[in-house]
Length: 476
Image (cartoon, rainbow, N blue to C red):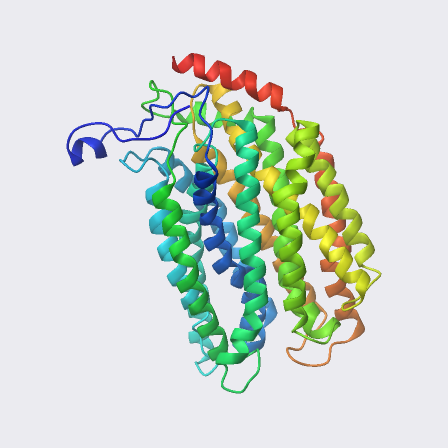
């Protein structure tokens, strides 16, 4: 397989040539250090982005004083816009020609912009006029969403370009998910203590506490994304004959690609589960469990479970099944069972924490295998269409994730608003029941549906080897 070194003479010549590699595609494998460099990108992204998935809604409802229904509408509308934005950026990234490759320039600039906007979205003040608060929330969240796409979508596309080997991709995706979820759990662990330490009144719900906690997190997280961008190389580049990407072949690689369609459906459900639960967990700790500090306990348990799941359990199953779809189906079934039984417990019971460990282990192991399958589906798209468009196909997977991440939190916010949720007050039983449903039974049902989809995934390890042999032959 081939590693990327720019060819050509001067800077302008190199900038105008498509990024090529000269490695033997039949023998190339990532070293452990190269896997780590790539995984660092998701460490930094999730270290910062977890503030949005967990605290953004409760920050604007309880701290800034904006009604839950208004926040819900904002999230939904901006995510709908993002559904059109992702494929455009994906197509532009596919057509980018630079000495850094197709995706790394987008990844670098998008990451810097995203970190800045995450800080700004938590810089609102409850002392502002309501109109100013609303404008700030809408404008900054819109810009943040675009920056996030410019960072994370090209980064996801790189996953299928840094190695052509299916097992290698499973390993690097498992490490990527380990880093991503370890960083998320670290944010969970440090979030409340940081907010309390920097608040003016010692509470975990002050605007000042939020701002400084988020600022510190972004200062620490952004450098890991920059290192990842600088140290990661595109190995699997488009065929030498691919000087342009006709729209009809681009669409063929999507609509006739059953593997990527299943991954898109799976990513939508994944977004519903992870972001829907994350949003409602903030309410669960405060109102159902009665102690926001339980978020730290949850983070510690989730951290250990993530390491076990992505570092061992997912790869253990993959080596025995040799089929990423079947592994994803099995892991979703385990997750569904754990969420179902969690409905009958309440934090801080021992059984609640045991089920938290099991569900986190299986869910994050599933995420590692799932993301490792995206590159295989891109290979299949090139196999059937003749063009390679990692960014375009990855953008639809990204859209599905964001759609799920918008729909479920928006539905949750709408449900709370319909039940007359009052920020900071004592909640009635119906509110507590709704919050419990959103972190247990609803994710259980969604995970069960997800398992059914993955049973139809068509690419086994053997099939992928056959696809890659044909793609290598075409390049030769």
